[in-house]
Image (tube, rainbow, N blue to C red; front, side):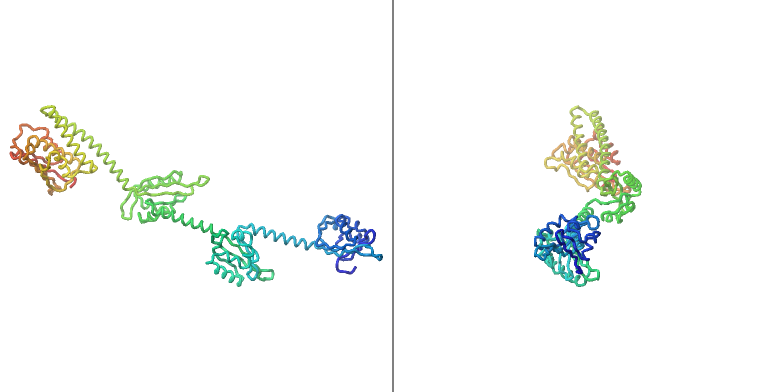
Length: 562
């Protein structure tokens, strides 16, 4: 009765309950009325669970139970309680079992504490194993006592291989000593731990990892070790490398591209311009400074077009002149297109500026050529019309007129050929003479003696000179020096300085032909040479009928080219 251990004796036929003071709290509100009552009545709510144990004990067999769950209503409501107890048979004077002795200790608090601890451990285990990082714990000596599931999955190590300092074996051989030294030094100082190293993955591939930990301290400030985590940053490193590669690709594409790439914010302010713009203009082009390089006549149209694009979202497309570092202006073609978010809002502009100066000049030159061609076609048709009218008007026979007309058209065509080869920019005097007299040069080409400098005639003068030379050749073949085998023609020209610039002086001289007499009438060819050529050249043309041979002298200004 005085023992400091809860005890009771169930005695007699009805197993009447006799218990000590330390057992009374177990009965709760049933004390003291339970004293002396039969076991089945005192513990009626648990009798069905206890009866088999009682029967076993009354049969003479002692038994022991550790933290057995016994639901009871000792406080008036259902309650779970755990007890560690032993039932021992008690013999009477006749040696028969007359009752039982129970020595009991309630372990409810202990069980619940263990359950709570286990739940905490299970919770931590679950949380740690499912964490996206590899986690580890050490004791104060630095011995690794725990690594979560992620570590073992990632590295392929077993617990036997990883615990202690075995985790260092998973680092790259070149990083192992450094990682160990950093860890040991931090542990000795009980300080935060951080190190980067290459960690071997289960497939043998090494990945860059960050290992970071914080020291743990108890309630009294004692050092308990580390809790740390390891992050695989290989993907981040690969992403960063891919980002660097992408930026390098963009930079090379932007800087090496013959176009100047640029970007602008949604409000139209340029925030990135390729270095080529600075090479071109000497300025950065950022913000609104790009306008400083635009030709004054093109600035407002460019600003208006860009403002409209930024306001409406329409693509930007304009050609304008940009001032180069040299001070010269070159034509540029600027274009930009917007990038929109999922709501359709413009978040950025991407543009390029391309040097199109040569193309623009080419287009302007082409337009000039087209205009010139239209003019020349009209003039040529007028010339053909005049040739036809004069040829057929003065011809002695129809057959003769056809031959003369055909020859004059061929001469006109040859002159056009010379001009076409130079894009109608002009023709060299020697080329005009060679093309015109070539068909009459004989088998050896020696019937013409040509001499003169490199002189270039404008298109109008080139056509007139070609037609005049053709008429001179025709007359020489019919009546002059080219009508006999021994005859030939000397054609000389030179450029002579004058008060109004250079003068072209051309002399056509026939040698070795029949004796020349003054013609009784002036044909179309003579009029074409004397009047038409003089008019076209803006100079003077003279034909002399020297008995030794016809001499034609042409004097005209060369202001239009030499």
